[in-house]
Amino acid sequence: MGLRVATIGVYGASGDEFLAELERAGVDHLVDVRQRRGVRGAEYAWANAKRLQAALAEARIGYEHRLDLAPTTELRRLQYAADAEAGEGKRSRSVLAPGYVRGYTEEILDAADEAELAEDLGRHSLPALFCVERDPEACHRSLIAARLAARHGAEIVDLRPALPNSPR
Image 1 (tube, one colour):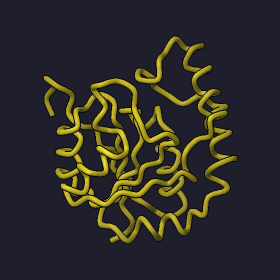
Image 2: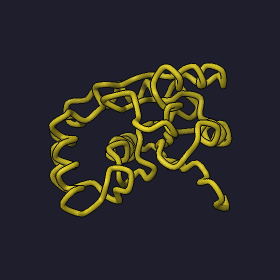
Image 3: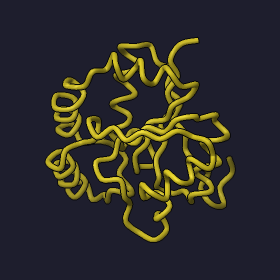
Image 4: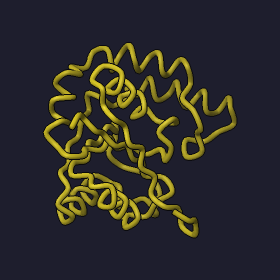
């Protein structure tokens, strides 16, 4: 079986819903691609690095922080400016700005050792790329996933924890 990689975000989920989705999908390793490993707001305190790592360890899910795949502060500012222009907030973003995609691709993805990343991910039955945005198309994890699919034949599984009061 070839490389399978999941993606998952924080927004819209409780810690319990998030862990349940990882377990339901069979994720055995979480790859944190955030620059800052914290999330503002009491409802997302569970996603701050130490709490998240403790919950993952209890669920027997591995954890790895890949700062080399995180967007730079300058790239994040570029996206925030595009969000403001579109009248969207970070938590309601629907797509990535073309300038951000270009910058992230050139500065981060093109500099990454993607063969090594694919090999590392391939050591797990289902690793998941993790960031904050609920929808992958609004997050740089989708760019990593697309690169892995295009160049390494990875099958991508986008996970979205069930929203409260919504059918699965």
